[in-house]
Length: 359
Image 1 (cartoon, rainbow, N blue to C red):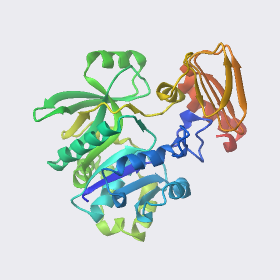
Image 2: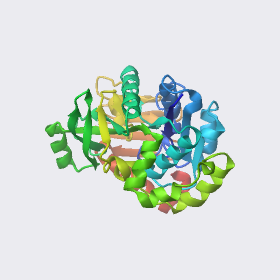
Image 3: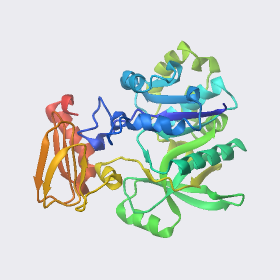
Image 4: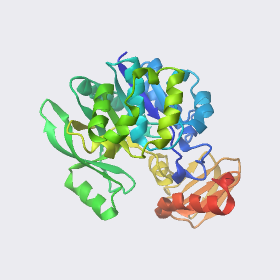
């Protein structure tokens, strides 16, 4: 009962446009036709380790109704609504105070809501080991995955000094965010770097202490009597301070600075599902390497493409190689996979030229 889970589900997911929209980001979409969205899959995955009453959802206030509809079993008290987008550091700090106000002895794990974990048994084993590790002392822990390719869309953790009593746990030397291709290749070849899963564990008090030590300006805004994190007082307090808080990733706020930060190396069959290419990589393919997501299609002389539609429209393509074809009711994307990192910029261009209805 001292273990909690905070699921971060407020991101916009623009790189999955046109399926992922400002009004319905990717975490709220059923990509695989299973009847479950990515968010619902994340909650189900963690229920075996954390009681449902200890699961906390942290999202932007514009997604409040969507979260309640998809997860009616989560207590209203444990749906934390950000009044402004401020990256992950303020969100994690708020969650730590929210939990500590209810249980000063608590430890918690933060999980992204839009990742895919294919090896659930390994995931559960890693979290159990992680909880035990942070509960034994004042420690912070990240989960790192074997870096299997020089992916420039991922964050990397450099490891050093293996823990003698924990052969899969290392001290964190540094964290590198989305390196250029040449640097990512060096990282992978060195064997010193892991992909950063964005999964972190620590006791609530340890997390708060790390912020007090390493990000005092941010920490001071949240450092108030615990009554401010209980009931209606919490909404009023957060509504006042959150928009004034600086925007900062938790990686750079504490995990890259703290002397008590470690990484657990685990192979979880993980994908952050951040792009169409990532979805292509984990989906079943035909002999030409093509992926079709819940749609009718005829693909002639096409190789290594991903084709998706939200309707019963038939998609016909000829002569495409390494392309994304994604069709919705009011938008169609035809884009080389190699250019998908520009989709975020494309969405900004669409918003400026055609308005928010298309983004």
